Image 1 (tube, helix red, strand yellow):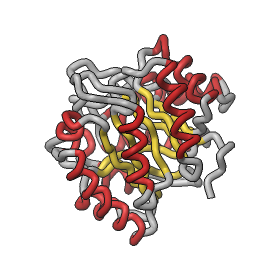
Image 2 (cartoon, rainbow, N blue to C red; image 1 turned 30 degrees about the vertical axis):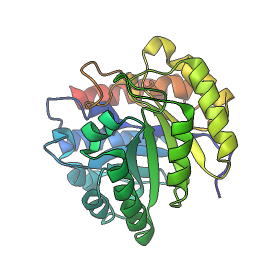
Image 3 (cartoon, rainbow, N blue to C red; image 1 turned 90 degrees about the vertical axis):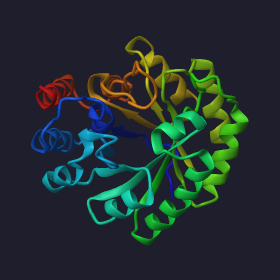
Image 4 (cartoon, rainbow, N blue to C red; image 1 turned 180 degrees about the horizontal axis):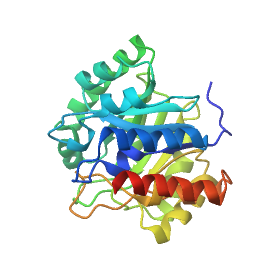
Length: 280
């Protein structure tokens, strides 16, 4: 049963580094993830993805990284975009969650998963079944949840329609993703309030990409609208390499930790240093 008052913080080193062109060793990635785990500041860690190495070369060593992770009570999430990736991820007991990006933009869905929205829904059906069979929990990221830069039709009803269809598959973990930093505070307030009211039996988190100057306002607005699960990345690194040419970074984890009063400034500094050592 989901606890509607529980604050769930998700650190996303996978999202932070997937677009970095210079390859980072598996050892460096694992060292940083182990430092995140040791901090005990996060509920989940989005650590890697089981996707084509041609599409995301930086994630080609996800299995090697996973072997080096010293897991504690924190849960690990891996991104998958098809049945093959889901089956691969299910081979590892350390992984609890399988994340799947489902876009409100046909253009972005094709860029991200080489599938139309309808084709992606069929894939997702199979991924949910694979997850259930292997005791994994599917998490669906509603990409472009607040609009898109491609001129495609977007409205709240479109978001409601797809969440309803996906929830009917048995998915209870969602995140609304502001993939290109499109969302205004009013959009965030209205969409979270409406979704939480319409779908009380599922948990709807926030995966914001944002300029640093607006990140704290977006966190505050979503929280006051009822959101209780938030993704972030140390120093606000990252962004989706398939969205557009100018990637907008993630919500800085530091803002989340301070807003929700988790950890000390010393711990934050240590995690920043760990991340900088990884990408150095």
